[in-house]
Image (tube, rainbow, N blue to C red):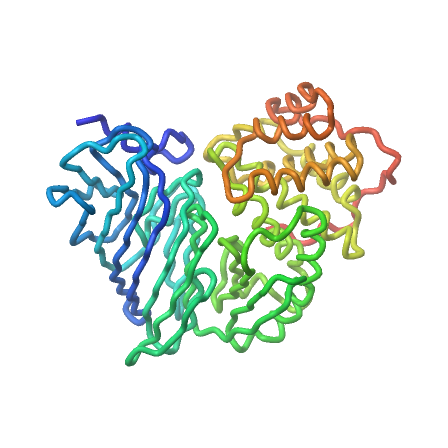
Length: 452
């Protein structure tokens, strides 16, 4: 038998998860969930392709018990669960390029998995459930290849009590079934496992128009006024970002606001989830609304090949906050950059942007240094070339994964410049480089808003 190391992804930021020997093409999930006792039973049908010769397939699955595994065309396939892994042993070897279909029946009471970043994945709410899977918590509710480089399409069916609203992608069907309600959703664009959404709660919903993009807001009825106020300019944000970053990359955009407090908002494929503590009806958290929306372009559509490149997600999303502030009549992006530069320069200079380390990959310095590097490129190139580069990035790598090397090559191509020294300083050195000289007003922002 091959060593256990071969069963996992080569990404040292999330050791012990993922399997580089195959890619997932499509996942069908059929789930029955009872909110009242947090009981869950499901069937997953996973279609994939072998990337190398292999007689084993390993999925990530945490805290849920598998009762049956069926491999199409292989009646002698066996399976075993080892900690957070489901190992399927085939009776004959798959060749590179061979397709396989695996059906997995499983059940249990889902719960978060432990990680260096705190609990991940499934979370019971006071009256419902949410999933917050970044970077590798999707395995708490379905078997998956839990690494962002493996993207698949999804069809998700969920049956739960009639009192509850469910969000799990673009809605296809919602109908009563006895004393329960059956929901059907689809994710038609390739989706990383950590971004597959599932939100369950006693929510009301309303449709909104977002610059030609269908939108939905789901929230507890008592929060209606605050939600409508805080997301009232969402359509304007979509318009600004479509002009700045290119066409919105998905079919629709859905915002869920829970009745519970959440530490931070989180992006999901085609949407975002906010805790009730992150809306106040005063627009205090406007930058977070912009940040999560921007992830649809940066992180969700253009995904990561390895987690060490997390700045490719968070730097542009942070910079989008500044773009929105400037476009909406607030502080200019340059003023915000100056203020954040001053704040960042006062902190320890011990982080390398292109490889911050697993423990630091969600450090705010990664977010802000990534955004400041983008602003430096804007000052260097000028607006026309800079934003053309950003649009080319989201279009060339739409619904794919990319690397820092891809970004560097694109920047040099679009600008026609050798940027080796620039990127060496910003990406690979710990010391914070200086911002380029500019004729823009040297006045920092007066108010950076609420830090979360």
